[in-house]
Image 1 (cartoon, rainbow, N blue to C red):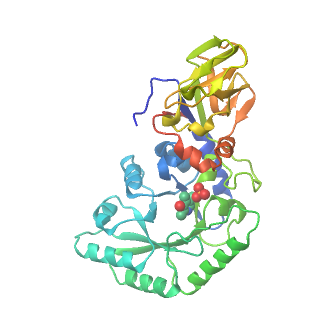
Image 2: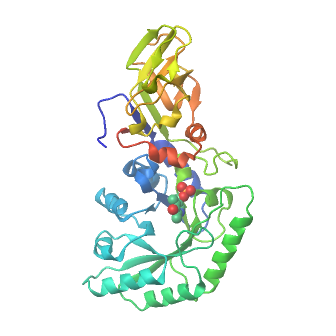
Image 3: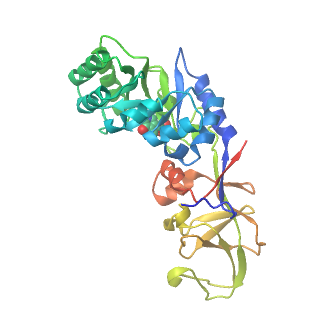
Length: 373
Ligand SMILES: *Cc1c(COP(=O)(O)O)cnc(C)c1O
């Protein structure tokens, strides 16, 4: 997608909000604990570089990403902090992982063996940094029993070009009122730890929800994602002790405003018909921007008034019904504050029947990200 700067549609990212959110989490860390900012998926759609800078300013000391390429991108942008790839990586990329000094996640003995074989063919003075992932109940990736884990630790310790840097797990239900399953997973992880004679530098179980609602239980590293962006990980289920500051605004402008008589059809399929004479405004954002067709019927803000999206949302444009005439160029807010009212990303997610994480990632890179300091 070509990022389209010469159009009024843009996401405005409040980097100071991100710094504040990180700083407030860092302040609550105990002992030698650190916070790595999770900037996968281009910083949850906020822009990975700007988010990474803002997180460092707030006290983050490293990053988590999902893929090798996301890690390389941060290195090429000049970041020298530790970068952990949370997903499974293929051993055929060993050389490039070493070249960019990325830490990898190993989840099975079979994968470890592939990296051992690959390393045997490479001349390097570098060490492959490894975090071992334990599946304590997420059912996604990770070692499933202590025997395999112990074997992995032993193998790494005998390889001069491997370094056991971390051990971690991920919770499936850290963001719900009922913490039974969280406690089960925690106990399983503790049993895994107890089965080992030694432990690595980083032990980590905390995503945002665990950090907010089960703080400082195990380990010395927090993987801080969605909360850094000012979003409540639980949606609305659990209250926040301290308010988070949302960092994402989505805005555009009216590009045409017209008075239509009763009986006028709007957009593809002519599914909307004006009941009376109405003011209709056209906004240059559509489903190719990640403003999905299902958003039809949702209301956007113009000068503090909620204006319903009428007719089908097109690839690049949509129409709203205005309470009065507004001039072309008037600001339209899709997410954020406008005239004393606010549309939250949570409201968009609720309307779509999804979670705010998905909304943030779905706004496409055709929409430029502008950074407010
Ligand atoms: C994405 C991810 C996180 C961050 O989760 P948030 O809920 O956004 O804080 C942490 N750990 C792992 C393994 C992840 O995949």
